[in-house]
Image (cartoon, rainbow, N blue to C red):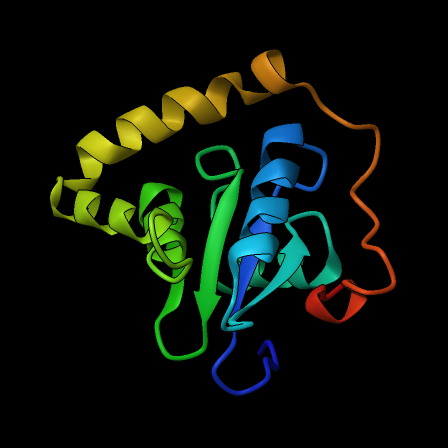
Amino acid sequence: MIDLPKHKQLILFDGVCNLCDSSVQYVIKHDKKDLFMFAALQSTIGKQLIDTYNIDTNKTDSILLYTPENGVKHKSTAALKIATHLGFPPNLMGVFLIVPAFIRNWVYDFIAKNRYKWYGKKEACMIPTPELKSKFLD
């Protein structure tokens, strides 16, 4: 299984998606508790988690949140759980967890389906700067 440092959570993201890359940069900037680590879905660890949890990447292909205690959260639940750890005001987004997942995920899927069209796509995954390298797993 994935060996994460104690009390860390792993965000898996689409490494070629500009929206996902911007979101990761936002999380890094606002992760004052140094809670999150990152890996691209296309990485070795990303593929391992996808296989372990039997995730259909045709249905969930943009963001996952993994913790050893709770397994994998996906789509809007992952995004909102991440937001709850980012301090004020992003943590207020957690209130949307009361909305049924099928409604939240309808909005999430609409954005995810159009993310390349609206935000573009890279040829390759982001390469973290040396300062950020410790936050990324491969």
